[in-house]
Image (cartoon, rainbow, N blue to C red; front, side, top):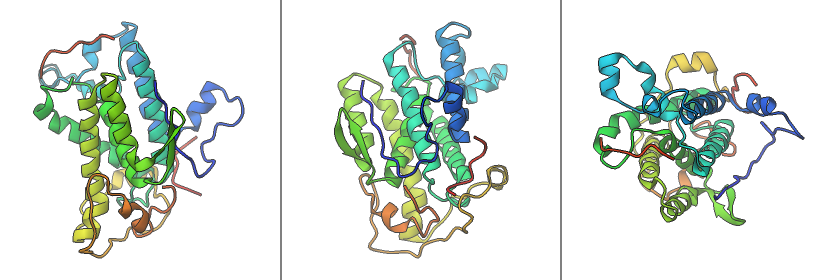
Length: 286
């Protein structure tokens, strides 16, 4: 399996020499820690028959008829069956969720802090549930991998020049989601699920980084309850950039991240049958 190691520009969250598993877990930023911990619990419980795998999947009928409300969350936490691909998904979840959460997310009102990342995940969660009826013929009702690549795509737009390594070959951050997509196709993986996440990730990026610059419209704002809980990232107010007619945005476009991070308060590092087989709240940079 292929692993990529994104470049890090700081030592925040480094685990040090020979840390314990609990130390490494506690060192994760809070949103990543909660998502990763829930994914470990749900994935192991399903794979060792503590719960039925069917109980983890998205089913609106089960929610509506039997009030199985946990299905709003478990499809985003079941990482897969007993396979190396599942371990890889969990690795990707930790790596890129941590990198993005600690590297200052796109600022949607909380200064690029954890509250903005939580809002980003909530939008991805809602987008996948709302769009699933349109892609149910192609995708299983499980969205953990989709959400991972949603985060990966957004991370790549925030860190387009970050260097990662795949089998020892350097890959620029902006190309990383598409390299993984190509590899997934070659290995026969769930490429449609990745595309689902990438498309929704692009919509998020376009809404928060391109639209305000090109059209002067700033319509995505982190809810106050998230800001009240997590706090403000770098304690700077959000600024809306002036419209610029010469700006471009779209797949593969990365210039907006390098040029506008300061303006947005984000400076820094930037339905068919399926086989079911195989410390503390971080408020931003110091």
